[in-house]
Structure formats: structure tokens, C-alpha cells
Amino acid sequence: MKFPHIIAVLSAIPALAAAWTPTILSRYDVHNNPDAIDFRQAGFVNQTAAWAKWNREVVTLVHQSGDTTALIQAAINQVGANGGGTVHLGPGVWQISTTGLAMQQEGVRVEGSGPGQTILYVPGANTSFSSVFFAGVSAYQTHWGSQSYPDSWVRQGVIATSEFLTADVAANSRIIKVDSPGYAVGDLLVVTGTPTTEFIAEHSMTPYWTTAMDYPAYLRTVTAVLADGYELDIPIRYPVKVRDQARCFPPTKIVRDLSVANLQILYDRNPASTFDSGLGAAQTTSATAIKFVNIENGLIEDVYMPLIPSRGIELAYSRHITVRRCTILESQNQNDTWNGYHFFVWGCDNLFRDNYSEKARRSFTPLMAMCNGNVFYHNTSVNPRFFTDYHMHLSHENLVDSHVGIGDYWQCVHRPYGAPILHGISGTQNTFWNIDSDQSTSVWSAQHGLGYVVGTSSAVNLGSSNGFAALPLDYTEGVGMREDMTPQSVYIYQAGEEQTSAADDRWMDYR
Image (cartoon, rainbow, N blue to C red; front, side, top):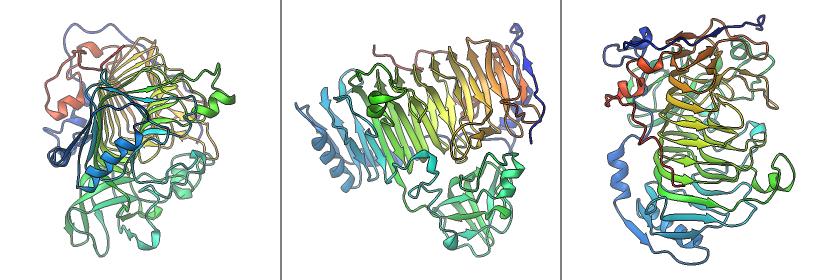
């Protein structure tokens, strides 16, 4: 439903001298509230098992001249075939072709000697659709507009072979009901449904959305088998309804425990004068430096990219990945065909921590309905071409925490763009906590249902977007009062880590 245009901007007020605690903290107080919204399982988990695989075998390569793609790939394949291990790249400039490096067996880590020492160099101007690292198993090169990803775990579940749920699943529930449970403890399941016309209408997205889009989806591990269903490791974060063919099924293509770390990725600067069209756009479109697809459990850390053709780090249909201390300074191609995105996620329960983005089209981009439970903590965004935003199709119950925007601010609003399925309402139930921006507005939040904005440096805009207003207005507290708020980070509060405002470990700049 469309509503008359609503203007609702909460202005910043001078910060209080005394510390204050948000009233809404109880919603996230996992230490005292058993029903609290819990983000503690975001990011790299099962670390002991992963490191046991990575330490099983270490292959150390000494720098060689010329194209080293085949040399590194052979080492990756070797440790993968042996059940896991680490490929360590010594200092030097390692030339990599646009075919890139594939990591398709579990338990593989590729690490350098440090971003200033180990440099993976991709020569030449034509890098379109290439990746330096492609991790996972997928034929994933399908155009976004088709909304069809046959190798993703969202699309793998054939309805005829799924176990259908016998009761609706409420948000924040770890129990799903089925007639005859056939899976075991430890099994990995996808819980999802079908975006029926009723689902679309209940979100006021007729005719923006169609039944060809994705439904909210969750990758979960069975922790107990019940007489009439399953207990899951992490709650379902949004209602999944029997009306919408609610079902569960095992994903058939998941790779576990992958890592890329301690290195620099270097591209040649494309000589084109424009990237909105023409040869420059064609030669750089959809080039992605690091792409993780259909991965569970992984770590991308201490990677430095001074210049990339288009996209930086992409997590697609993946969960429990931590991306930390990564720096991306510039994207050349920032045109409107999915280029120029630095940190790009459509998966669940991932963690982006202490990263830095500069001169992107968009710096940090959560999108799609399977994007939920992700945490963006302690990141910095500087001068993107467009503001940082939730991008499309109901990303939900994610957390943006302790974010710094310079020439940037966050949005989560209705977006009447895209084809053939319009983006529509981009999110619901997402939390912004301690947002620091040098702009007059720190956050524009007009989410479906309720969103939460707690502690900002400047104003919060709750107004309608493109004539579409999401009512009720989102919850706000502490506008302009972030500096004296305690806890400064709700993610750190939940994790039990020491609260700090120090920025020396936020990101690394090797310029």
C-alpha cells in the first residue's frame, strides 16, 4: 500500500555529558533475556576444526617469475585432495591470469607473507567476469536479472523432495515442525518457502515483486530431532508460513572451511576515460577480486586492494564467513550494472569487521531475502559514489554497529528500481547501532514493519522513499547522542568482549 508522503526527520541534539543506556537494549540482552535477538553466531565458527584442517599440511611456495596461476592452483588442489591444508605464498609479485584461482575442496587456506610483501598481480585491461579467488562450487555466472541461480542452496530444493512444514514458524524460533522427520542431528538444512502472491501482498509489494523472486531463506544445522520436527542451531529470523509452501531440504553444494589471508591484490588501471559505457565498461564489468559462493565457515582477513576493476569481496549463498581488516581503496567501474560494490553479501550469519572502503559505487551492500543475521561491525566507508544501503528484496534482522561514514550515510528504504523484478522494500527488522557520519543525516530508515536506529552522530530520516512510506515509523533512540551511549557496541556487548572506541585496529592502510 502507498501512503501520502511522510516527512519525519529527527534532528541531532548535543550529546549528554553523562553516559546513558538505550531502553531498547533489553531486546538484545542475551545475558538476561532468553528471547533476545542474538548475533553471536555471525561469522567464522568451528574455528578449532577449521584450523586443524589448515594446519594439516603446509605447502610453501617461493616466488617465481612469469604466470604463476598454474603453480598456485596445483598447490591448492594438492592440499584439498589431502583433506585440507595451507598454501603459503612467500614475498614477491605473483602474476595471476584472469582465469583466477579456484578453491573448490574443503579445508583450504591460501595465505601470503603480508599485504606489503605477497602481491597477487593481474596484468592487462580486460578483467570482465574474472575473479582472483573463486571459492566454492557453482556454475554461478547467471545474470542477476534472471533471478535464477540453479546452483544456489536457495534454488536446490526441489519441492517434490522437500519435507514440508506443518506449522508456521514464528520469527526468533529454533523449532520447525514436519510430519515425519527424516534428517539427523548435524545435518545441514535450508528452511525457506515460495513468494506467493499472498506473501507479496502482505508486504505491499504488488506489483513490484513477482513469484520468481527468492523467499527468506536460512541455512541451519539440526541440533535435535523431535517427534514432529527439528530444533535448529540458530533461530529463524522472519516468519516462514505454511501458506507459502514452507519447507526444508539439505543443500547439495556446500564447501566448508576456506580462507584467504595476508596478501595484496593488484590490478592494472584500465586506461578508459569512462566506465558508464563503452570498452572500459565491457572490459571491467562484474570482475570480482574474491568471491565465496556456497561456503559454510570461512575467513577472509588482512587483504589489501588499492585498485580493483569493479567488485571487491562477495559472499553469495554463504554463512559463517568472517571478513576482517580488509582495505579497498577504489573501484574503476562504478556503473549501474552491478559494478563497483566493495563488500557485497547475500547470505546469512556472516561478519564484516574492521574493514575500510573508499571510492566505491556502494561500500557495504546487504541484499536479497536470504541476507539475514549478518553483522557489520566497526567498518569505515569513505566517499562512495552513492550512499551505503540495504539494496533489495527484504534483507532482514542484520546489524550495522559502530560504523563510520565519511561523505556517506546508511539507508534502508523502498527502492523502485531494477528489472525484471523491482527491488522494492529493501529490509525489515534491521538494527543500526552507534552510527557516526559527517553528513547531516546518519541514517535514513523506512523499513517494512519496524527497523531500529540507536545512537547516531546526526539526524535520522524516517520519511517515505519515492512516495512509499513503511508504517509504523521505525524505532529511534539517542539521535545525536552516540558518543555517550553505553554499550558503544551491541555486538561486542553480546560477545562479552571488552568495549573499546580505539580505531587503531579498524583497518590497515598500506599506501
